[in-house]
Image (cartoon, rainbow, N blue to C red):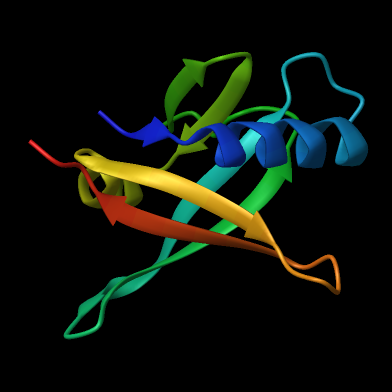
Amino acid sequence: MLTLTDNATAIVTTLVSRQSDAADAGLRIRSTASETAGGARLAVQVTAHPEPSDHVLEASGVRLFIDEPASAVLDDKILDAGVDEAGSVSFTVLPQTV
């Protein structure tokens, strides 16, 4: 199952609270293209609710809505996040260590 670092949890919480007033809002992660040699391409967006086929992950007060293709890619990963000097958020997908 996808896990989040403390940084990712804090950043997702901040993004969702700033971009949506919906009580059940969350961050939606979706696949934007089929897997290539460079790996799957993923996009994120704050949404008020999940799509009907999304997997919903709730952890540490954060709600993630993950589409089926992205869920398969992220199942055994760690989601990390950071903010640069300009305020841009970036997400990194890391392997889970055994």
